[in-house]
Image 1 (cartoon, one colour):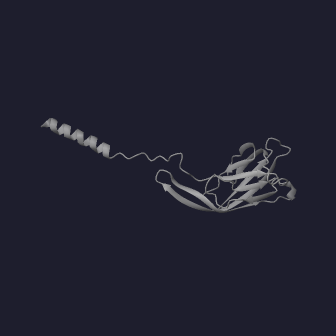
Image 2 (cartoon, rainbow, N blue to C red; image 1 turned 60 degrees about the horizontal axis):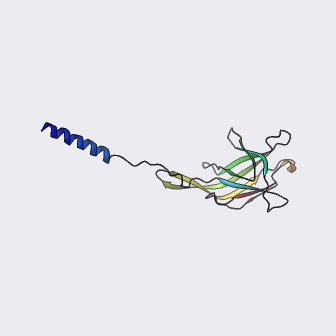
Image 3 (tube, rainbow, N blue to C red; image 1 turned 135 degrees about the vertical axis):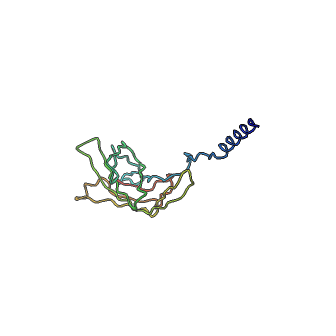
Length: 166
């Protein structure tokens, strides 16, 4: 009888352990998360032609770090999900102290939070995107000549959202 209670107790403990386990809540890497803003650079003289920016870096307003990207004709930038605007300083020719040029762009938008699931939590999409370049004095100091918002909704990373002409 004593062995019966030991075996019964052991079976109950094992059953309790098995039934009390939960599946792991891990967000799969294929799940869409908050998209980056995609910017492509174009030649102001030939608006249909991509034009790389030499030695490009950026600093997001409020951040301490400068992110160096190198020479590129497009970039992905994070937008602040806790605010309705993000100021980003784009710096060209960062490897040449004599020709470094910095322009600041302010992106205004609406943040739309979307619940994905328990494992992944929330993601943010951005709507009503607009972009404004801060004009320097004299304006010829700006390396960015104009900005065109091509997609006012930032919901994925499939399309370019903003064209910058330089």
